[in-house]
Amino acid sequence: MKAFLRGTRALSALFIVLLGILFVAPQGAAMAGVLDNPGTGAAKTPCYEKISVVNSAAFVMNWTGKISTGLSTPSTDNYPVGQERTIDFNIYGIRDGVEIWPEVHAILGTTNSGPRVQFCEGGATAAYRVTGTTLNFSVNLL
Image 1 (cartoon, rainbow, N blue to C red):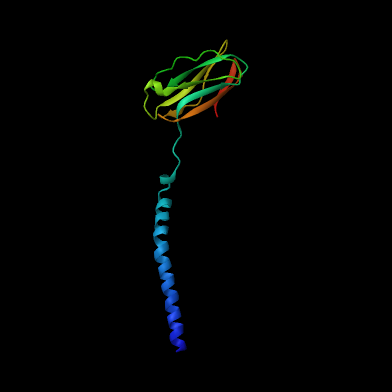
Image 2 (cartoon, rainbow, N blue to C red; image 1 turned 180 degrees about the horizontal axis):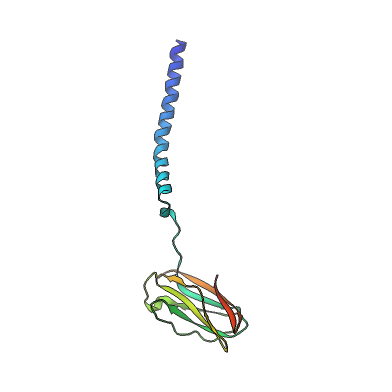
């Protein structure tokens, strides 16, 4: 009788192990699929509808929105340190994925461009900061 009980306990333990494998295997297979194809969970490249440029430089400036299709927006008004201006690119009818960027002009100085970002309708606002002096300044994406 003792041998019979040990045998049934062993079978019960084996049954529980097999059930565990059945319930865990589908999850493991799904995880293996994710690991085999890591691009499925990758973050999307951010896209933007507007550009805002903060003047933290030692000069008065204005800027124009540039579009990789060759178009440009009208220039902002001239504005001093501590202020910012925003351009909404959505009104120009460009398609998603087109690159946009600010081209900043220092009054009585040079012109520099900021890094390009991708446009998408309903996207966020790309924030840039201008620092430096009229002849030596940078336009950085924040």
